[in-house]
Length: 461
Image 1 (tube, helix red, strand yellow):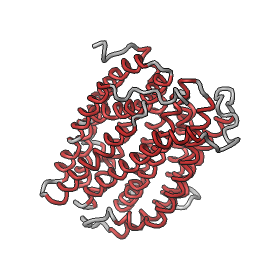
Image 2: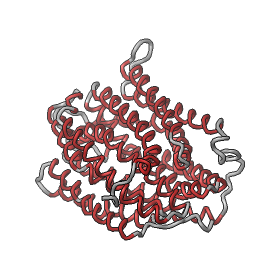
Image 3: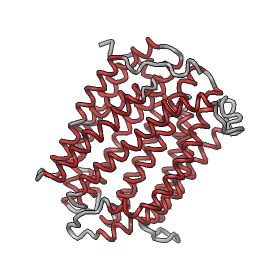
């Protein structure tokens, strides 16, 4: 068992990075839960409209995540090598690519937003008004577009801080932002005091305000702590990046990871669309369930971020043997942690949907979606850690096939065929789609054991 269980000091380094991210994400998702309940309390159409818009923004968020992660593979290894000029250059690369993605995203949402929203609207049931759902979704989307710039910039700064092992400032910024969000949500959704009652529009405004607060805190802290961050001095002196490095980041990191995240995000959106053909009540049920699922998933998602940094720094320092020994211990810990967390989620799956002012059918669907995800959480946590270990060595081609390739070749076709061409109920369709992830888990563990991920990608730069 020594191969799979490490000492406390071994896990401490990963947890020091992961715990602040866990806290930040836990609070963020808790606020998303409160948001969801607040919006859900004013109507199922409002809740479904916001859910559809957020499903579309999820693809944009993943594109930004892919861009900063692509350069982040190099950034973590530069930190391990103590090459701070290399860190500056990867930061600049992140800044440029995130700016381009934000511009493209705004153009696409403004040009094709209506068509994208209508893609999710099917079969009104139990008095649900699809036209109202569309209107609320469009209103929410247009305001949320003004928050894309601060979101992208915050990701550039926070990812760089975390890759250097500094996770607390982004956590603090996230906490302040979510407090800001929840306060303005309450004031603007319901029209408390002299504030206007804006409903869905108020929820969007509150989110945008909180994003500007978050990026301001992270930027101010970073530029006022130059002694702690040796790379921050002169970070904007130029936006030029050495051609060789830019090419390697683009080919090894940006292109495969951004493409992967976009296609994977699109696959998640497509899965939701497949389920939505069974009725708008399924959209509402998934929205409720996903809010809770995201709240519980923060533990293994944040742990995966810690895994990425620790493994990247070990490889950057050329500690290949240490990286080999660390991989199975980190994967085992992630899986064991989620046996417990998944058990807790399963126990509350029948209670949580009762917080919402919606139909019994929607509540029942949400409860079933939650229970299935809870049972399969250990599998997803192992997959998540495996993905980040493969990526830490720059094996982005493999992770591309492993992640979005599998989703589009296996998961989406399964969901599409079962949703459109069978009489199976939606719960069975959802269960079958989730179960195919087990095959990917076996493949991931095989690749880790083979050691195909082991590579120092900054040694010759």
